[in-house]
Length: 600
Image (cartoon, rainbow, N blue to C red):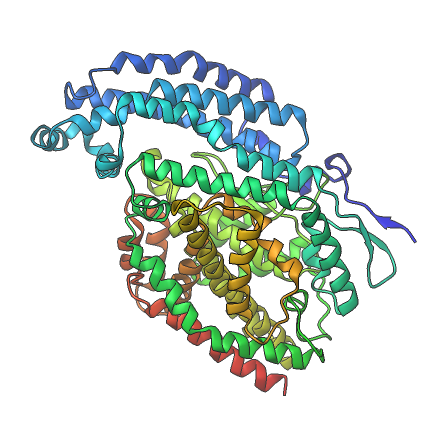
């Protein structure tokens, strides 16, 4: 039997890779920009002690910073995308390391700026804002000024800037360990062929009809994590310590409150999400019990919760076919949206397939004036990857519209809004696919996919949000975060969210050590709020409510020009209430009832 090996980048055609020459024609051009940044950034000291001199002086400083930031964003974009291509490439690692050091130096040199802005007294500040010379900076200045209670002295800000790279070292450790050093071996697939088990192919194995194959993949995969569990636990613990340190240094009551403060999101939104989702666990357990019955399993294990319930549907969707499905589903958003996205996906915005050393998962990443690139690890036999493409396309088009409508300093939207645009696309894709089929089996397949999407985005991410809240609270209370503590806390949540419907294997407790988002704490709850907002907004668009499309496109164009909650209210959804979350749970129940009927 032959072994199917993961190809190197040199073994796949350029047409399947993103085209980074749209960022820099050659590495030499990248080096020129880095050299320019290195030579220019020390000039920022010319404004030291003068920030509050006049509105014109402040505008000059902000203009200089904008020049720097435009180039910094692009050079870092290029280097980070290259590293995502091959995490073991020493040249790429060196470039990112070079930029990290440079960013530390720039942060140290500019540490005086925000404290000096905050030091301007309120009366003089009002005069500044009345001056037309600062018109284009008002949004950003408001966001800076509201941070006043949490900005430190110049000396303290300088120390934080100097320590930023060291404080973030845990993330590099996790990435290098899981994407490069860890090896998961090979497995024989359902055809008897040997296939390499990786973080990317793991999801493919869990979709196989053979329960024994799913179990083998699960066991073999987590055996490697068990061999590195103490290192991973130490990395996660230091991630939490860094979050708590930064929050305390900036006078926030907790790391969670520091995180939500940035988006001006009340803590009640986070806690309200958890409470609402907890109320929706009964239909989730009902779904797991349906899954056990349909799959004819005596016991349902976590490795059995991803395989499609309709065995006759064997999907093999090429990447080009996926582009057609995704763009067709987004037709309600208008010709411009569909045309720009289709052209981008066909003209190498996307790095399509898994290659050796490539980062696992998927993401969209943009910089001002450049294409919003998409990383995929697309597999023809994983239908969920069509949804992943729609999801990342939502991010990319959010970036594209924001760039067209906003100035550089206001275009970058927060993650809270980003997850709305991505999951909105998934909702439209589901609606389109259901309209395209009259086959009950295919309909059941698609509905099952939507149920699993809500399960993964609303229920699972909220469970993750509970875990992040719990482990940060433990650190803040002064208790030690050990491997056993992580596993115990995670086990409580597995038991709550799986109930008596799923057998929780001991290896699953290690899942908390392999989730990359835990290294960007308090990110995952935004997936759950995002899908809830997306369901509400997509239902308005699909119902052809007057002004719904224009309001949604206005949301995309708003970028970061406003805080998330008022932006969403203007688009048509109020996330300060539990109504959008409960409506999404109601949709889950409706789809579940239809699936139960279709499957008899």
